[in-house]
Amino acid sequence: MLLPDNLTATPHECGDCPIRHRAVCARCDTDELLRLEEMKYYRSFEAGQTVIWSGDRMDFVGSVVSGVATLTQTMEDGRTQMVGLLLPSDFVGRPGRQGAAYNVVATTDLVMCCFRKKPFEHMMEITPHIAQRLLQMTLDELDAAREWMVVLGRKTAREKIASLLAIIARRDASLHLVPTEGKLAFDLPLTREAMADYLGLTLETVSRQVSALRKDGVIELQGKRHVIVPDFDRLMEEAGDDSDGGLLS
Amino acid sequence: MLLPDNLTATPHECGDCPIRHRAVCARCDTDELLRLEEMKYYRSFEAGQTVIWSGDRMDFVGSVVSGVATLTQTMEDGRTQMVGLLLPSDFVGRPGRQGAAYNVVATTDLVMCCFRKKPFEHMMEITPHIAQRLLQMTLDELDAAREWMVVLGRKTAREKIASLLAIIARRDASLHLVPTEGKLAFDLPLTREAMADYLGLTLETVSRQVSALRKDGVIELQGKRHVIVPDFDRLMEEAGDDSDGGLLS
DNA sequence: ACTTCGCCTTGACGCAGATCAACCGCGTTC
DNA sequence: GAACGCGGTTGATCTGCGTCAAGGCGAAGT
Image (cartoon, rainbow over all chains, first blue to last red; front, side):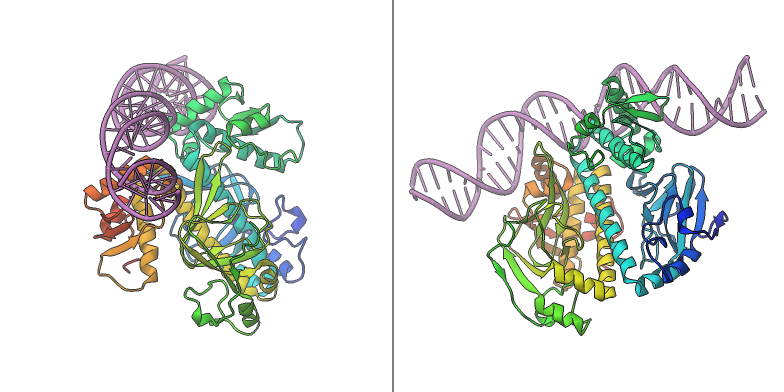
């Protein structure tokens, strides 16, 4: 599981990158960064493939270009909890750390944009604002993790589902920057089981609550995965979290 | 709630600081850092006092010297979830961010060691490895948050209690560095309600499970707060987490 | 066309933990 | 020393979600 054979090194200009690598973007930065830009390479994975196993040596950092991956932790008896959801533009990796702390699994076809860790860390040392940008991104992750602790600890099953749908809808909306006058639609990138693992529920409960939200008109479904949100505010209300999180601002 | 009147500016040498400020320690660092060291000041709070309210402007960063504080998030209907437990040596604050994201409350008498945010941020810019150290600390926090997501999402009430006790016991043991041949003892710095807020439970359930652990000999109690752990491995087992986390290594 | 398999849905039932309520011990106030 | 408040305990009951079980649907293989 160390260096997969589907590793492809594609030199390119920053503008070609559909999602700019937020930690290091040669469009905003210059000079030494262009050297790093040259070291950039892509890796792709199929849905279901494991990117890296918890505990394995991890010699790269990167970010998600397209597709969705999850960070999961499993207890000895098999109970598993998702601890991170990686959507396009999210960063993966722990500069300064040896091993991976969690399983990283692609839940859809996935493309990542990577740097080898060593040179990346070196660049971090000689280019102060990379470390700072990384710090800001890590603080964002920490905020997301803490928000999720509220969901896990204090929300009902229905609120949990609504919260998850809201997160995905919001992130999805911020990508295809087409304002869709209040109606959002997206494909769920997760199975019912993965949703359950994210929310600390069972897959049956997830299924029931999704059905309930559909029956109550909070969402519409086309097939099992395509979700339409007729009224985002209503969804946020169901999530027990009345701020719109800046989607419509 | 902005600048409390109990702010005291105590110039000192690093060695005097019972808990060295992990982000910036003039014993390890030098030169410019000594300038920062001079800007260090202390603030103290009584048990129950709020250090800062969520949303308030936060113009300092700091770390806990002694005592315990909590980060909490409250929903509109009053449900509250603790999202961070701040023990001695833990860092508080978000360099580069304006407001506080959570309520910070002292649950015991508390002493913090602070820097004004502006000069601290400036120092971060001109002293690269401060940003890097801060990044490492933030990654630690993120790991802790994710570990807690597993507790919240997948553990039973009994396991949750055991997990919390184990965390406190371990942190406590690492402070008074006296090896106590397997027997640990400490005072719970949290009320039953605060424990419930940390664990996503009700205070009644916390009370019942603590009693159950006592009845089963996993812990002993002197009064309501003083806990004795006769066998740490047993406690870890109850927590559903068989690694000792390095306490006895 | 039939089978198989993965993913999902729905129903019946049980239980862990929430809720509601009474009470205890202890320190503080008047 | 009576009254009070605060934190904690314990009991009785309720309920949301887990568990177990059966079956549906669509895609892919034979």
